[in-house]
Image (cartoon, helix red, strand yellow):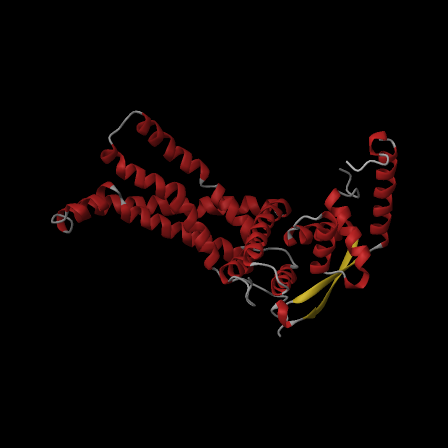
Length: 110
Length: 210
């Protein structure tokens, strides 16, 4: 896979971060993906993916506030960079082109 | 039903075996979700997935460190096995003549099952795990996995002849000491290494006080 190409889970995480805007940290990111995929998401996978995305320059992170229910540990907030948005758009165009060429998926629910 | 505090053992394991610069935030997220109504079973599932993911991530991200850990593991353990083996061999018959003469049970434990030697090995493996964790506190899950994997050739070398003996129909009692040895080598030693690695204190540098 090319270095700037997005894997399936990377795309999900990036989309969740974009949807959440300024409130994107681990817990709401996991909730957003779980809600959409209706599957339990491993918190560890989200952080590993975000570290990879940060390495690719698709997201940036900053340390936020801590709360008592977090055991005094700070939140890490994430924000999608311009490169990240471009990568998501590229993935969207690629997938749309591929979907439009599959007649079995037109209007079906399977 | 959930309590306000996450399972202590899971939390203890997480603090020691999770890795990555955002580890405190990850643990904080798990605490927040647990206090938000997730179950203890969910917390344990997440803990195992975080540890597994951390181990794989550590090895992928630090291949040089993994090779160094492999080399250090053998560097620590080979002399330990050599010295303890020699000390045991030199003292064995003296012990038999002077200490173990009156008890057949003690004699068998010492001479046939080689319990003192195997115990010394377990101690050496635990110490190695502790030293490795001290050297690489930020990626100890991956490095513990590498160090435990280094045991596989030993376990195969030791276990394969025993497997053949067992298949040859050797009576149970005469093979019992050998079985004890195999259990030690295949389970006791890797477990000792992991326990030693867990006993080293974790570092949570980005923790923010309440």
